[in-house]
Structures are given as structure tokens and as C-alpha cells.
Image 1 (cartoon, rainbow, N blue to C red):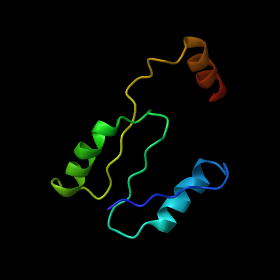
Image 2: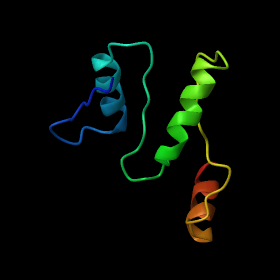
Image 3: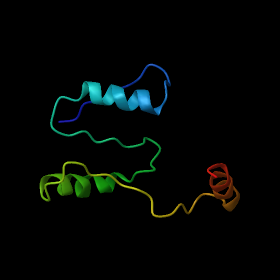
Image 4: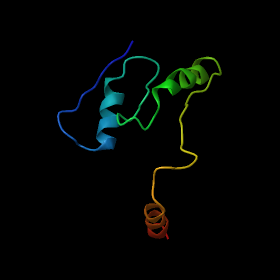
Length: 81
């Protein structure tokens, strides 16, 4: 079963995540960015890790960012020092 939560305005990512958690009624919550950053074909694999492998939390992280320029990556690196 899927539930859809639509925010009336852009209140930020954290507020949207909390709204999703507040509306959750079953045993699992799956958050995915709507911009295609997370491929939908990963859903089955992620749910499999949760159900078949017994994990409580399953998440993804990018190994590398092919579509970011070097200057953007440099700015991020420089701003964290």
C-alpha cells in the first residue's frame, strides 16, 4: 500500500520528511527524491534488504557524483575546512 503526502508549499526537505513520517501508517517508510536522483529500480532491492535480510534501516549513498563540475566539488571541499 502506498500513501502520498503532498505539501502545499516548499517548506524545505526536513519539513517534507517529517510530514511523510507523520502520515506513515505501516511498518516501513521509503523516501525518494522526485527529481530522478534515486532510480526507482532500486526500490525492490532496498525492500528486499529490509524484508529478506532483516535490516531495520536500509539507505543509499552516492559513491561518486559524475554530473557535478570540479569547481562545485572544490567549493564544497573548501567550505568545510
